[in-house]
Image (cartoon, rainbow, N blue to C red; front, side, top):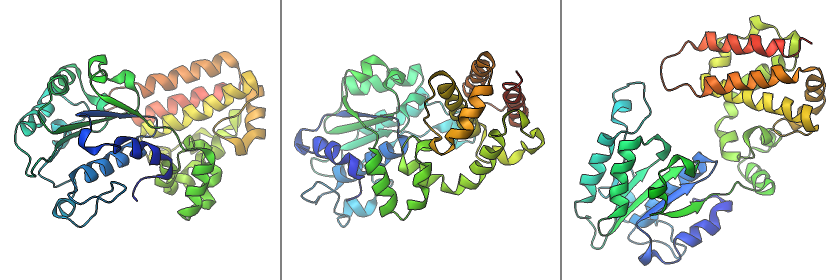
Length: 321
C-alpha cells in the first residue's frame, strides 16, 4: 500500500466503482506533497491492467513497468517557459494545447483511459484555464483529468462545477506521531507544530532543521538580535522559505500578545510570551504586512539580501518601546 493511513477513506471513495469514475477530479487541501503523491498512486492504479483487490497497482504488468512518467496514456502539463529556464511559474494556454491534442488520440489499451494531470493548478492563467475548461465541459471518451490545488478559490468556478471534488484533510496529531515513529523519525516529533502537523513536509525538510535552530536562536533575542548574523545562510532555502518561516514566528508573537495562545512554537512558550509582552502591537502588524508584501512578489528576479535585511531591521524595532 503506497498511500498514507489518513488517506484510506479517500482511496476507497474514489475506487468504489472504478468503471464509473468521473472524467475529472480536483484534489485540494493544505498539504500539496501528500496530495500530489496520492494523485500519482491514482494514476498508477487507473493504468494498471491487474490491480489488487484494494485497487492498488500490481507493479508487475506492462502498464506498471512503463510507470506513470513514461506511460503513453499519461500527459503531464509542463510549463514550456520553465523548461527553457525562464523565470516564470505560470501555466499558459500553449501549455494546455499539447494536452488537448493528446486526449484526441486513442488509448493504447483496450477500453483504457487517457490521463492528463495538472499539479498546482493555481498556476493556470486565464487563457489556460479557459482552454482546460473546454476539455472538462466536453470530455473525450475514457479520459481522466486530475487537478491538484491547495485552495479551490484559485480555480475558475466553472471548472470546479464540472469536476468531482476530493478534499484532503490534515492527518490527526496521533496519525502524525505514529507515522513519525514508523519511519524512524521520532526525534523530529517536537517540530511537527512548525510544519502544521504535516509529517511529510517535516521529513522532507529535516536537513534544514540545523539552519532553523540557528535562525530561531537569533529571533528569540528580539531587540537584541545581531543583524550581522543575518547572513546568506538564512537564504539557503530561498527567499520564499525564510519569509514563510518569519510569518509563522510573527503570527506566534501576535497570537500570544492578543490571546496568550500558541500555535507553531509550543516548545518556546516562555520566550514567545516574553517577546510578545515587549512587542509594540502596531509595529508587529506593520511587520506582518511587510512580510505579506514580499511573499506576494511575482516570480521575478529580486535582491534577496536587501529584502531580508530590510525585514530584519523592521523586526528589531518591533521591540523598541
